[in-house]
Length: 116
Ligand code: SF4
Ligand code: SF4
Image (cartoon, rainbow, N blue to C red; front, side, top):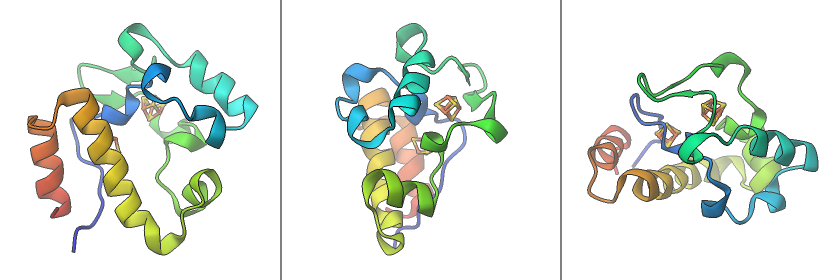
C-alpha cells in the first residue's frame, strides 16, 4: 500500500498560479484567498518558496492551506481521516505532473518514496 510523504527537492505544491487552481474560492475562506493571492509571485511561484533550495522559507509559520493535516483536509475538502492518504497522494501527483511533467525526475522520486 502506498503511504503519502512529502519528498525533498520538490515544491510543486508551492507553484500557486491561480490559473491552474480554478476552485480556490470553494475551499478557502475570503481571508485565506486574499493571503493566497498575495503570495503569488514570479511565474506563479509562492514568494516564500526558495527556488534554489526548493524549500519553504516560512515553513514553521506556513498558512493552514499549505499543511497536509487531518483537520485541515477535512475542513477544506471534506476528506475523512481514512481517505487522507490516498487523497494527498493524488494531489501531489497531479501537482507534480502539472509543474514538472509526468515523466519528470520529481514524479519518479515521489512514486518511489510513497510506494505508488
Ligand atoms: S507536491 Fe507533494 S511531495 Fe511535492 S513538495 Fe508538495 S507536498 Fe511535498
Ligand atoms: S508558504 Fe511555504 S509551503 Fe506554502 S506555498 Fe509558500 S513556499 Fe510553499
